[in-house]
Image 1 (cartoon, helix red, strand yellow):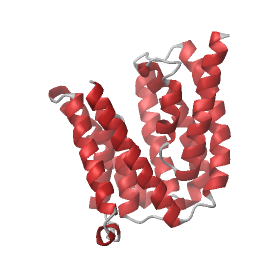
Image 2: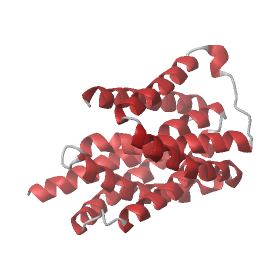
Image 3: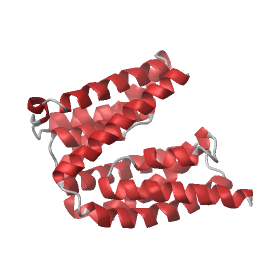
Length: 247
């Protein structure tokens, strides 16, 4: 009975995560994690979410692949590699608490700027240099505070991508980065058979929620998408602050 409850909560948590991720392209892990940590340790919840998130990203990549532009994600992927290395190196010399507060302040400042009309209308030019910088920032934030969606959400808003273009680009980027993460974790022997079985329940929930989310996403216009991403960024800042305070 106890195992059934664990499987149910993981499946339901990732159904919610899949619904959010399918509709917006961001926030899937954040939506699922609170429910997962009710029945799993934080470390196990992260491992399960990485594996489930990979399959969820594959589903979204299939749904939105026509909206993905290789030119958009090429620099993001290239930049993510040194970003991850920098994040791991910084993590060795700086405390997690300091890093979380720094990223929290960065996100909060951006959200605050979006309330100013002139700032919110500013558009980041489409250039390889900007993509490399955004990819580096994403890799750094992911490897240091595990919040890869925050810098990508900011980049999507600043480039003023359409909702479909943002979902397509981000889902493919998540799939590629997620594959590298899961492979490295598996090679390190972090996955047990029990975690794989629990992840299977999460995958079923994520795919079901993702399918419904994709259908809902078709009704989200640019303005609503912008509000949703800003809300996600605000939630990310709050979560980072709470994490830092509790340490």
